[in-house]
Image (cartoon, rainbow over the protein chains, first blue to last red):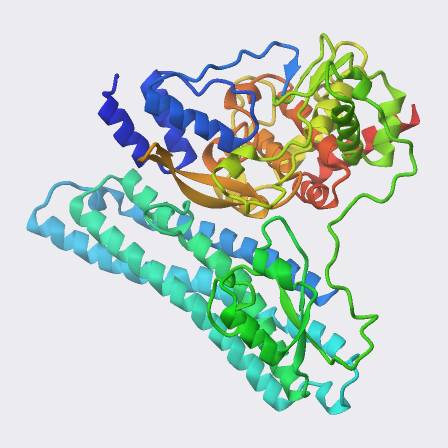
Length: 69
Length: 549
């Protein structure tokens, strides 16, 4: 389902919980929030908000098998 | 135990018990609604159905009222009874002061005052209960009449009771949690002031410790002795004092942890003068510092020195011995991303890591140092976990005792056991209840809500999690490991992505690295011990083995 810019931004303003932001990201981009290599939830949420507002997926990182963060 | 310690201990315990009780109350109310689900959510509106819906709404009101009384108010009553400990602790110290003996015991008047103060406190809890009961009743009635879905009704009730602070208002858990804290401090303040005045003491010391969220106003006054007159003048004229009212009661404002201690300026205060307890720091090391800066791929002399200092400040003597016992990583990078790569033994970790996103949202005071994350020692923990096993595997994820200890600790929490479809755990896949996660959240962090702007346009409302202490991000990551990422996703807490936790072994490996990172920090480590006691025991056994090599 693709949302118009207005729908996307309206829904972004309606998000309240962490789950809401993640669900909206999934709705907009059709995939989970990718690995961002940050343990800080505040940093990740900044990225999610910008991604949804600008309609630009987060550039996720693919972790190598032997990498731990 | 000092009076300050007792007050802090009671505040934490009471807040956490109130949160648990509210989670229980929420479950009971939702179960009541579930019993009448079909009728309540019916979208058919015949006069008969409307009559039945109204009748059930009225019945539910009575049921909810009883539930509020039997859970929240009953718990409040039992917590207030514990205030006697505050009286005993104060009287013990008061009895040691150089005052007339007749003031050293509790009088009949004192007992009456204590009773009245307790009653006043209970009234506060009752007021909160009535406010939220009225809101829930109105909400249920409106939803029933509108024929909203059961899921929406549950969401509304959870939002009112244990939800997050947002535009819909403040949930009861936040309100009551603060009340539980402030009631203890105010009871103490009022009783102490009364006893001091009756003994003719007119000077007070503003006492307590500094933490990262201590207000500037409190920082200015900690340790200072003032006359009553001076206190009243400061409290009514200093614009930084954010809450009006009697200075002996409001002190620094909501959630203030400071107390007034009565003193006489004539007393020799040498013994008494302990203006503030310094933050807990590791005892001076007797083991030589570790040098890892030579492994940094780049950095000035000053940066390298700072890197060594930061790393050594994150280690106990035992850990330094362990680090010295094993090969160091091949390369270390001072990078924003904390990462360890076992194949190339490359470690990346940021020097002096703090919550920068929290700062951007102004969740901390400008001159606050912020809450520290022990990233270098976390990544070093990964390195040791890997190289000490020696067969290309990680010790933590291949050691049965460590893995079983984690499972035992997980099952200490209230939760549900589900069939483990991956076949990894024959006992089943255990899911910790959300009510437990809320209590853990309250121990580790608070929430602050902010509007996010792009230019002049508001684009979102974001509530930022603010950790309560250094290393609490690592403790949060441990909880996140136990919940496969739910803690991070649903409570916006420090942790890893859900996909990261799906990988075999990551749970054990991250718990090991986090314990290694916080081993030197008494507050964070004690919390971890409380949350995963069996795992900590196995971890300590491992450290002992590694130190003996």
